[in-house]
Image 1 (cartoon, one colour):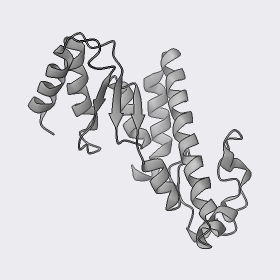
Image 2 (tube, rainbow, N blue to C red):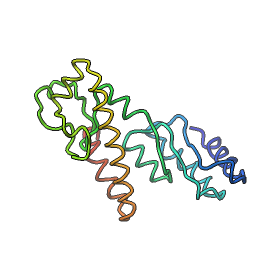
Image 3 (cartoon, helix red, strand yellow):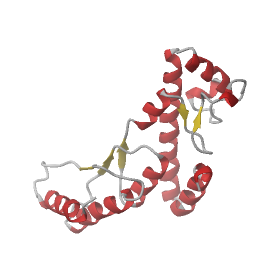
Image 4 (tube, one colour):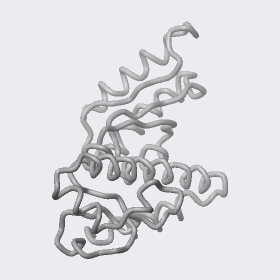
Length: 185
């Protein structure tokens, strides 16, 4: 949250000249949805000023789609977070239309696939079956949900990469986030 400290840290680390010292930079700390883009931008600006632009930047502890877009937009190369598996273990499933809670009663008799992506492991299971597994306290439920959420995030990053290559990142961001978060806006 402190711009001066984030900038100083990035400046000091990027000025360390030993090539063997760092293979890349980990960026973390406490972020809110309101400040993640700004805080990451401060750090990447300093890294770019001090000759560290060629080294990868890794953003720690983010896992929501908006976080990934904000990270990429501000020069982040890789990410990690426990969120997709943590929320999956509790019945929250990522979909292109926003997250769903598979434990909601409306999924009790829903025979549609957990996801429409046929390359996803969870595609072969119905929402009703997944809910049944959760309600039965079957460990397979957490495995299916976590695997699906990871597939969703990996697919999203592939789509983001393609949007960059096609030079339509901002259009893709607007379209994706508009659909994903429409219920919250």
